[in-house]
Structures are given as C-alpha cells and as structure tokens.
Length: 70
Image (cartoon, rainbow, N blue to C red):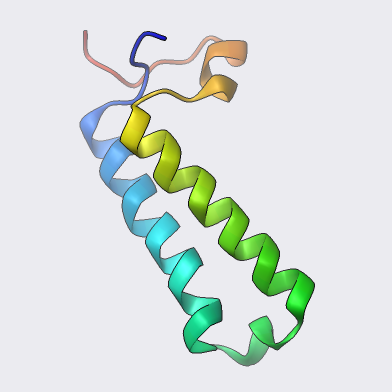
C-alpha cells in the first residue's frame, strides 16, 4: 500500500470522520434519532478516520487519484 492521501486530505478526513462519529452519540441534530442513520454515520466516520490513519484510500486507487505530493 503506497500512500495516496495528502496532508490536507488527511486532516479533512479526520475532522469530518470525528464529527460523523460524535454527532450521533451526542444527538446533535435530531436527525440521528433513527438507529440506522446513526449507525451508518458512525460507520462512514470510522472509515474516514481509518483511511486518514493509514494514509491510503482504496477508492482513490481504483479511480487513479492521489492527493499525496510524493
């Protein structure tokens, strides 16, 4: 796995992923009062945080995109 996520993309994924994990737990907008929406949001948030931590996005590899400067 070669890195294909740059610094800006990585920070954005961490921020958005963290919000998507925490918002249903805090029930910030009442949108997440539905269990499937809350679970889906937390799952997508976890995927974003994981890809930011690994600096690798499988979808970017399939499409042929890289935001990494190397």
